[in-house]
Amino acid sequence: MTAAAVRPVAIKIDDDTKARVKRLADARQRTPHWLMREAINQYVEREEKREAFRQDTLKAWEEFRTTGLHLAAEEADAWLAQLEEGKDSEPPPCHV
Image 1 (cartoon, rainbow, N blue to C red):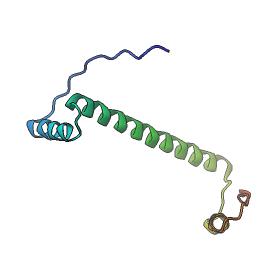
Image 2 (image 1 turned 30 degrees about the horizontal axis):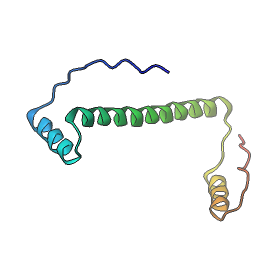
Image 3 (image 1 turned 60 degrees about the vertical axis):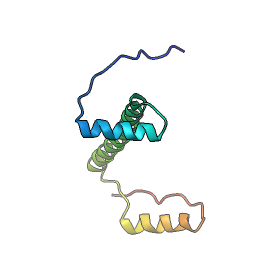
Image 4 (image 1 turned 120 degrees about the vertical axis):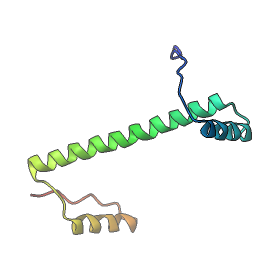
C-alpha cells in the first residue's frame, strides 16, 4: 500500500485564532500543524457522513414519491416499542 501524497496548503487565519490553536496545541503536547490537520480530517469525515445521510434521505423521498409505499407513524412507533422491549420483531410491511 502506498502512502497518499502530502502537499502543503496555505490557509489564512486571524491572529486570535492562530493564538488559540497554538495554546491548545501546547496544552495537548502537539504541534499547531498536527492540530489543524486533525481538525480538518474530523470536519471532513463528519460532513461526508452528513452528506451521505442527506443523499439517503433524498433517495428515500424520491422512492416514496414514486411508489407511495410508507408506514404510518403509529405503525413505526409500535414496531420500535417492541424492539425497545427486547422483542426481535420484523418491521411491518410498507403500504400505499
